[in-house]
Amino acid sequence: MLPLAARQRPKTLQDYIGQIHLLGPGRALRRLIESDHLHSMVFWGPPGVGKTSLARLLAELSQAEFIQLSAVTAGVKDLRDIAEKARANQAKDKRTILFIDEIHRFNKAQQDALLPDVEAGNFILIGATTENPSFELNNALLSRLRVYVLKSLTPEELTQIIDRAFTDNFIFPEDLKQTLVLAADGDARKALNLLEMLSDLMKEGDTVTPEILKEILSTPQFRFDKQGEYFYDLISALHKSIRGSDPDAALYWFCRMIEGGCDPRYIARRVIRTASEDIGNADPRALQLALNAADAYERLGSPEGELAIAQAIIYLSCAAKSNAVYVAYHAMMKDLPRYGSAEVPLHLRNAPTKLMKELGYGKAYRYAHDAPDAYVPNEQYLPDTMPKKSYYQPTDRGLEKQIREKLIFLRELDKKDQL
Image (cartoon, one colour):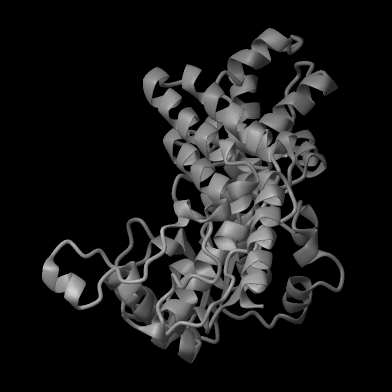
């Protein structure tokens, strides 16, 4: 017997649950289907949101022959055979839909092999991918496809799918059903697989208990991809939550990544970067704490060491924020090529030999510690060919407020010295 998820594939557009932003009345894909003007396209979305089901439904509604390939196992020869079959169908006034699951796994040569037949309209290509097509598909193929973004199913939509599939004679309390829905995490295939596992355990007339459901859900799963776009979305959310001073959100994204199997060392490295990029001199302790957290994890491992990273994340979230160091660094890197390999001013050079002294190395250098306030007004430390410019502009937050006041004081000394 086919798995429950396969048996529950919708047969009509009315049976299809989810993706209302594409299939609701007046929406783009709905209008395309109703006018029967299909074109080649890509369905981009997380697992279990109905990409394959929708492709099959389009073929059924347009009375086209549906041919499915997996990018994992298919090769260029398979594509040529399908193209020949599609041309034969065209001669009989019949359309062909080629559905390629995980199309992002096709290499450049395989993608290029699709171009002539997509261009000529020999078949309608529908690709399915969980990865960002703009990163995974070459421009030549992508320019010939319309990308439709499919979203995770809501708890309400998953509940509809489960209710429609539930035909057993055991009792499934509503609160426990919602526990299963949440465990499915927007994935209809996962929800139906969990329901099928539950059905195999239950007898007629039995009632599902928390203990039975816990056995089914013994390995909670969160959507996570250790190298794809979803991974970078999560780490981006963590970084932006710290920057936005929201410790609760930052902790949430951290726990999501840990629960999904992310290497805590990667997160620790990102936290160290965040300490410099978004806090900097407003609170230099942030960088030290981030380094300490990474070191603590190396000493303790998981799960004990993860608490130190969580501590650093919460501290950074609450710390005073400044990107002044980040801005100054990138401004200097941008200006650097304009001045080339500028010479070090002679007075800043060391003069360990007699010849160097005769050439003026170190001449007229003024030792800052011998000056009042340990500062020599209007001393030139940048190259002579480079105009004086304030790249570092400290904020008035945290320790940088004191740094700002100090720099203002030094600039005033420069002005007095010029009088």
